[in-house]
Image (cartoon, rainbow, N blue to C red):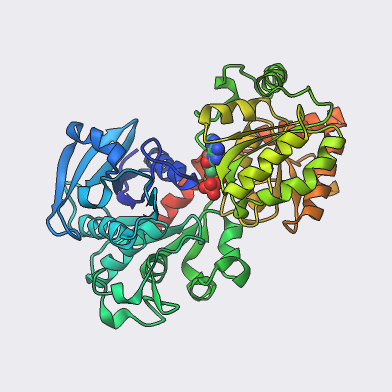
Length: 477
Ligand code: ADP
C-alpha cells in the first residue's frame, strides 16, 4: 500500500525490547498493524542499560547536546520487525533496575528522565530526521505526556499530536518547583493547562495539549469522565470530550495462536486442548477437576481484584473447580495466593513470577480465565482467553465490558455469548459469576457453544489499526 503518512510513536516500553505491562504489547504491535493501513510508524524509547548492547548495530540519527545533565544520541534500527529509535543518554537510563525504579524504589529523577524522552520526541517530530518527517506525534501514557506539550508550547509545527491513556492511575506527578527545570512555560502554570492539584502531571500536560486523546477501550473512555475512574483527571477529560475516543487493543494472533502451541488445537479440533488440560494438571500436581480449571495470569495488585480470590475460591473448589495463579506484585497478595495453595493442595497451584511460556500453557490447558479487575483500561488476558476457548469471567469495567459477551439469557438464546461478566467488582458478584461458570461447564453442549463463540471472536489488530489510521487521517486532512 502507498504510504499515507508517518507517525513518531513515543513510549517507555515496547515489545520485544522492554515490557512491564500491556503498554509494551500495544506499542510494539502498532507499527506492523499500521503499515497495513498505509501509515509508517517508528517508536522512540529510552536505551535502558539492557538495550545498550543493541546500539553498535544501529545508525545514529539525532544528537541532543543538552539533555538534563548530559548528551542524548538517538540510534535507529529494526528489532524483530519493529522500527525503533533508541535514545541513549547514559546519565539518565544506564542504570541497574527497571525502567521506572531501582532497588531503592522509583528513580527520584523520573520527571527529568521522561521529560528528556518527550523533549527529544517533540524536537524530532518538529524537525524530521534522516530524511523522515512525521505528520503525527503519538504519545503513550505519563512517560510521554510532555511530548505533545513541548510540541504545542514550541509554536506551530504542522505536526498533529495524539495522547493515549493506557492507565490513568499513573500520572507522572512532579513538584510545582520543577516547572522551570522541566522547561515548561511559566505562563502555562494554571488549572486550564499545566497546574495539577498544586503540582505538575506529565499526563495532564499531554491531555490538555494534544490534538486528540485516545484510550484503549470505548467504555474506559466514558469511565474516565467520571470521578470513580478518572482519578482526578475526570474534569479535564470531560471538558475535551469532543476529541476523546476509545480504541480497543488487539492481540498478536501469531504469538497467541492455539494452532501454533506445542499441543495444537482449533475450533474444529479441540482434542489438543483436552490434552493440554491434563498436562497442566500434571505439571502443577493438581487432581484433574470435575468442574472448570480456572487460571489467573496477572500483576497481583489491588487494581486486578486479586484480594477477592480468597473469598470466592473455597466455594469454587467445593463445587469441583480448580485454580492456577501466575503472577507477581504486592507481597501481601502474593502471600494470600500462597495461602490458598496451602489450604487447597491438589486444587489450587500458585506460581509467583513472570513467565510467558507458562502463560501460553495455562491458556492452552485451562477452561476459564478470571479477570476480576476494579478497573481495566483494555485488558489483554481476557482476549487471550477468547482466542484459546478459555472462557473469560470478567468484571464489567473498561475493556472487559467491550470485549466479552455476557452469557445472559438473551445472549445464550441468540447463541452469541462468549463469557461471563459481573458487576460490581465485589466478592458477592464474583462468587455468583463463578456459580454461573460452573453451571455452564456442566452443560457440555452449551459449554462447547460458548467456547466456539469465544474462539470466533475477532481479537486481532485489524479493526483497531483501522481506527488509529482514521484518527491520523483526521489529523492530516
Ligand atoms: P496490565 O497492563 O494492567 O498489567 P494487561 O492485561 O493489559 O494488564 O496486560 C498484561 C500483560 O502481561 C498480558 O500480556 C499478560 O498476559 C501479561 N502478564 C501479566 N502477568 C504475567 C505473568 N506473571 N507471567 C506472564 N505474563 C504475564
